[in-house]
Image (cartoon, rainbow, N blue to C red; front, side, top):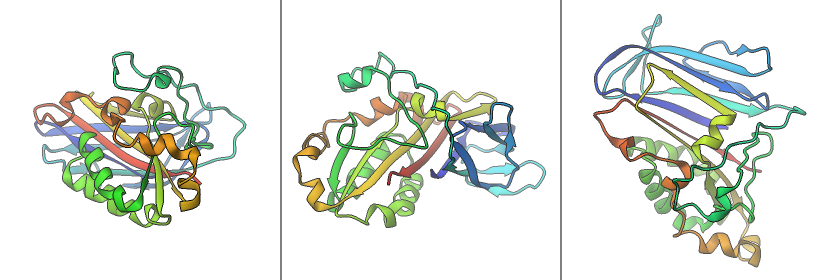
Length: 249
């Protein structure tokens, strides 16, 4: 898991906001900024927390150090574990746009992420068509211009390794079971965007096993799959936005 970053956008200045991330045992923190010490809980999970002030333009100031930030940053790596990931709940029944197969249980195990032709929302694109598609999807998922640019440029070297790229975005409720995010005071809306992707060689991409994923490119309602709320871009609300991705090898 690389570069999950957390933005806070309150409608008015907040002098103190507590932000914490808690991982399942299959994950351990590898990099954190601002630096804080992860705590190991009794059930084997790691947790981190920050305390910041937040301004409407997104500027954060860490309490104690007065470090000024645009976002909070963490990364994690899979750890060897015999524990199975806790089962993730199904998508909300209000998501009328999700494929029928997504009405059943969806699981995300950080030690064994699933992205293959059988993944019900996986799409496959040639790299030449990927970046405009990705920018459009990220805009639908409530990422502002700077966040979309950072997302794409950060992942570009890995996205360009193969002539085709398969990807899918995790439903927020599924992802939250692996990485719990808690913000106090509670925000009005939280949007967590987590993409799984992998490069696909041309010979494999052009085979029949990926035909459904190729045809699905223009059909998936990613905002519905992820669970983005209409008020995710409402500047009159306290909004939290997180984005990150994982390359599936």
